[in-house]
Amino acid sequence: MSLSQTAALAALQGALAALFAGDAELMAAVGGRIHDGPPRGPVQPYLAFAEARTREVPGGGVRVALGLEAVTTDDGRTRALSVLGRAVDLALAGPVILAGGVVVLLRADGTGIARLKDGRGWRAGATLDALIDG
Image (cartoon, rainbow, N blue to C red; front, side, top):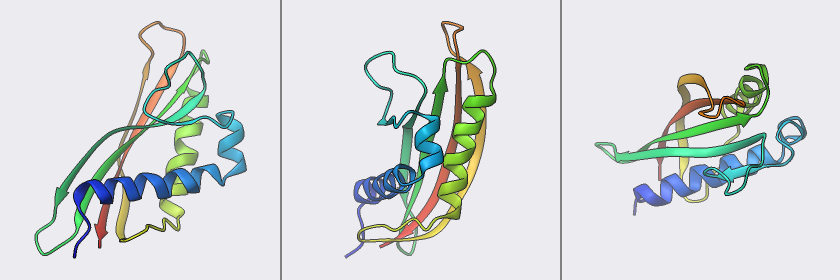
């Protein structure tokens, strides 16, 4: 039986969250704040899992596009880019170990940064593109 699209997404996010939580440098940079979406309160800096999309791949497997966002209140972009860069580097260096599936391919597919709407910080984002066989 193959991994469902939702199970593949949940497994990838869980594995990445564990990988990120185990990195002292990243955890120090965000004050230990890694969220499943934006936090409810005004806590910054943080790293969050953002928009995600999945689709079945012909012949088996699931393709997952999972967004990451680093949000800071700094005047410059450097900190947001540093946090995001560290998270992406960790993800690509792995190992990303899933329960019930195997990551066949993992790459970064696009990065960007924008000032927050209130003008008091930055939001840097990247999309991780994964092919999961399960």
